[in-house]
Length: 278
Image (tube, rainbow, N blue to C red; front, side):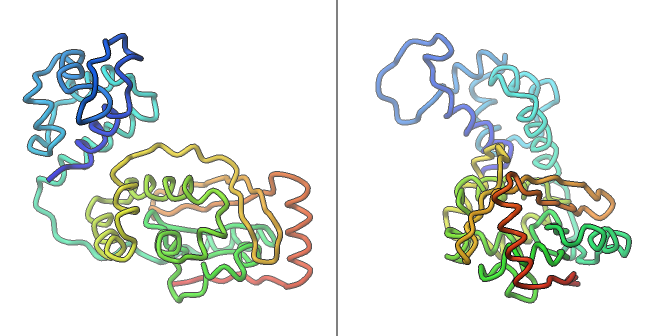
């Protein structure tokens, strides 16, 4: 059975074309990308050891080995941070844990007051598992008719991967799906991630599982939404971390005048109110 660390190293190795590293074309191979031999040589470790890491049979590589692999793979600063994070949580899997309760859905009163100050803007509070805990009336406006907030406990990941309407609503559905899958690795603990995937994976199907294991660092560009009313919205996202609660306050800002005008038209049609889900 693989590990998050092994999956990431293997995915990065498979994504590197040998020719880009000055290696000769060795003809057709069963697997794309770099051979284990090449990566192991550059990292200064044995092929056997690299194989154990990738297959999850060695879950505690030293910091020196992790850094050597980062150098050999020529990872970006963001990718290096992600590699070290995966090494940390992969090692933590070996420990004995008491299965935790699902993460708290409580939103601090001060955060709710902040949301009220943001009205009539577009903003939400979420946790690392994608639960929508509170939102402004503006967020309700831009998601009206999409089904995202129709359930008692709306969850972005469940909606994205299981509701067919999500593919029409998110103009760049593939990119958003990669973003959400990647962000699950930043869940408060590995156990909470497993708690969600045990519930979500069976209904979301193999596409969700594949994206989760790819570890694609998101680009986080402009969020493009196709509102059911016919408006095409382009939104910028600003995120405020709430580390004590492992939550995020996300504010969505119009990326252009056309979007601002469209939101104004939606607002004139309906007066939004703050809604908190506890």
